[in-house]
Image 1 (cartoon, rainbow, N blue to C red):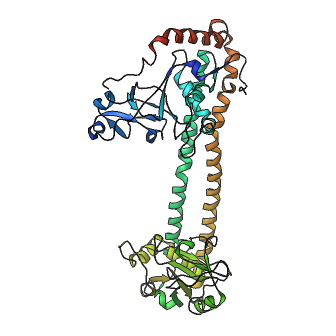
Image 2 (tube, helix red, strand yellow; image 1 turned 180 degrees about the vertical axis):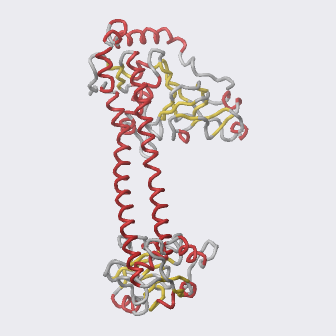
Image 3 (cartoon, rainbow, N blue to C red; image 1 turned 90 degrees about the vertical axis):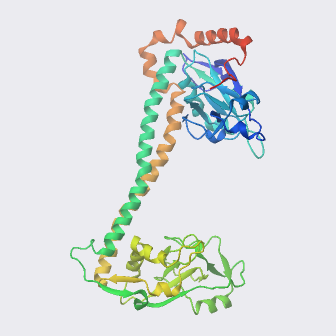
Length: 448
């Protein structure tokens, strides 16, 4: 079904507006010298940007001469036809290409930036047209048959210029939004530092120094040997299930009531306890238990039961999560690949505590500031989603003619007669007919 376009445009095919479509190839990997030259050689590995200033791989002139690759002139649009479907790039340099790419030699009566933006606008369509079981590719005849909305030449340039301006604004907005999560992370770290230093309360608190063992009723760990597990029963959590803000129960193993009772007699996690990951990639991660559900722990997690008469669990969590607290925890884990925090080390964790009333005030203030940060983060996430959708929305409007509706009204002489899209298409066809004998002449196997 043809796309709805302005009356002054013409629905054509991609093959109608390109003089040729040229593929490439891969030099023999058996000849190592082929890949030790200075000629850029483009593959799908390079299709991660819109404009390239270099390629990952380079080949020699000998490799060009002894393979099916072609050296494509700078500025020629290049598309992926196998993997990375829907991607289109241009390079600021001449480059050889491999067999998964095709170079589109655009007719001089078509603005290259217009065609590139159009291709980006149908990226999802092109991806959906891919076929293949393991690796999807798009056949050349499908590529050639893509519907191409052709406006008059003057309007093509206006559209491309408008898209340059609008999409630059989108990218600028996106960059600013992408920077905010880092700012919020620094903000939360600053709040934690201010909390444990007493800067969040009006007067400097008086502190008393403790070892963690002085203010704890129990410091222990979970099961050292994995018990017999079941498909249901009492959840058995390990380090991977302990996140900062939640416990993950989706993919845990289970133990029987009998096994759980034995485990819980020594290590009984309850609401208000603090868990510390003592082994693995997330060693030092802490979690304040805020659920009443029953569960057991493996030995990769430590359990700390605090003396609530001396310290609030919420305040102790702030101490652990502060950068200095994390440094002290992780410093005891060693520098080997198998980092581990031992009970004896946690018992000697040193901290300074203000009074319970000051702890309460600090916790309250931190919760307020973190709630503010969470609200900002939610707004940023929503804005990022809108901005990520905005590019495709703008492109869709452009190729429905909506961005240049006023321009067409103001410039009727540039869209009719000899300047019309229909006349333009006829000129393109005539020029391509003349070029037919010199098929693929614009690709070259020459020194770059």
